[in-house]
Image (cartoon, rainbow, N blue to C red; front, side):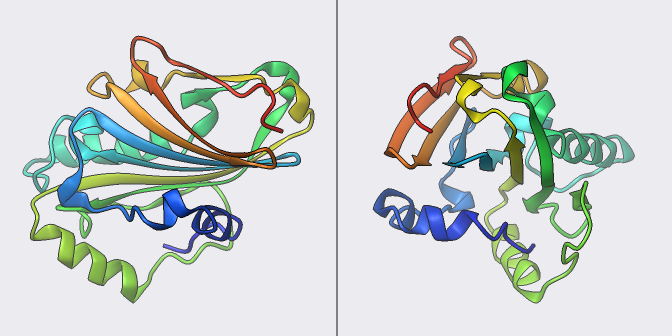
Length: 199
């Protein structure tokens, strides 16, 4: 899957991100990761979440019901403003969004995009999927680019993500903004992230 152009240069410039590559076999159920870059009126997000958090299982889909659950989850993950609620005054809109399943079901799951001009196939993804199938783990991966017409009003994000995906308990958040890099934790019981002073 083609990366959002602004995401990796920003995150890889920060040692905490560059030194901690994602490994599907190292993930913890209930715990996902959200990387966020804030720059001007642009918000870029990258979400990684264990399959068990999103659909309740990580094995390859065994039934039509399993496949339907995966398809529904991918479609839901491709709608970021329903999962990460931002103040209405910030006037945020989705510029680009995509979601996919990597790992045990990567060959069966369909990638979902709500934008044009995205590369739908790639040999690198195929090779990565083959490697992760051996671990028996699957992970949902989503990328978003948002534009907020009034970024000064983007004071917080409320994570409806936890209500949507009840098995998700925590997201470890890494934020890069003009004011620096910050690590935070958002949980099912405390689902708000304070962004004051980060723009």
